[in-house]
Length: 342
Image 1: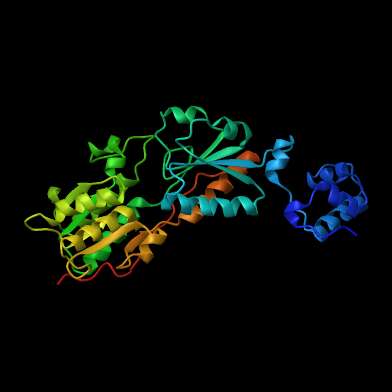
Image 2: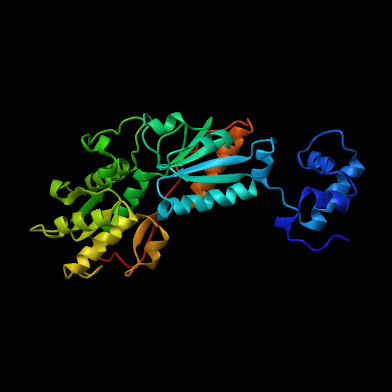
């Protein structure tokens, strides 16, 4: 009888001893190799089930087996947006029996990830011409950025949902805080975004502009401010909007962090949200529900996007046919930061 051992501490030798076979036979069964008799294969499988042995995909790759590692590159480890995507990616990788290497895109050396990974999931990646893109594994999928297989949300439709919500409450003086400072290549063009660039902020601006036009409202240039998706830029741009001679009664802010910055600035200026000012964000990060007032926002299915990204990479690594993912739908989450104008 084997001593009781946790699954993480079990080895091939433990399973082999339980099944009465060699460690090589156990390895052959785990890797699906031919030449193992059915009765022996079943005995090994029973031993695996009885011991709770779990295959370590990282060890399998390092030992020269089939590559079951996927890289994830994120701009910041502690960024709420990226954390949500990574959480979905981790769940999918565990379900598909792959390991993840998560690295910051500012890290100096990608050689380990490039050598070991079957593919890479890029979260908010740089533009197509960035030097980082010359040192990546063969298969690339992106979330919120350009690649051959981008996982993108319907940014235009989400912006339309936000403006329609505010219009439905009776607002006609609606300001907009974009994230275009994070996309300098498209600030100069109110038309189409350039190919190979991030364009989520541009598409949210287009949804704002066209929703106003559909309601017969004129877009006022002074009601549009550009931030960079940070809380600080949300506060600074909101201050400029709220100190206008005729300030807006509502703001659509194209990122939750900026929206919270805008709310804090409004409160610092003595305004009540939502009595004096309604605010709608975009993302539905965990901080949105925890805010006071809780933030009305447009939800992106970030965990689902991370999971689908991993599923695409696994299919590519295993040479299965892959279709270009359709834009993910958005949902308006109505909380406490919006109300009819007084």
